Length: 168
Ligand code: K1U
Ligand code: ZN
Image (tube, rainbow, N blue to C red; front, side, top):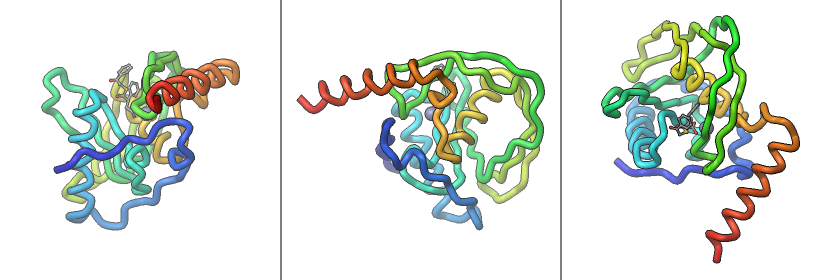
């Protein structure tokens, strides 16, 4: 297993749209293992392949307290959304910044698991928010895109400052 480099905003590669996975094979299973290792190392609860510069529709998540319930979603799709709710979001690609985002409260979704089986499920709360956030990544969208232009500019400035400090 190896940890992968997580791209940071405003890297243009975060805006690429990921391609559907044609077959759940050994390469996809290896990618899933590497993404999970990266997500745990970065203390995240989710990670999309786009964030590690792989344009394939693969997402990993683990919302458990003990970090022992990894889930891999291949070609995830939202089938139905109901209600709206606002929740605090963060992003491993926008370090040091969180804000409230409004999303669907409850979703039904489908995906392929690592055996290539199609799974249909429902989610609410943080799981629903995380799935929507990760599918957005696969479509080249970031949670800060939902914020006002003033707030987005603030994020841009803060990250430019962080990058300057890192380069010193
Ligand atoms: O996709 C990512 O960048 C991972 C991201 C997932 C996520 C967190 C919170 C709401 C929606 C999506 C993270 O894991 S950020 C780190 C984190 O664990 C966290 C940050 C803020 C609130 C809750 C959790
Ligand atoms: Zn993110």
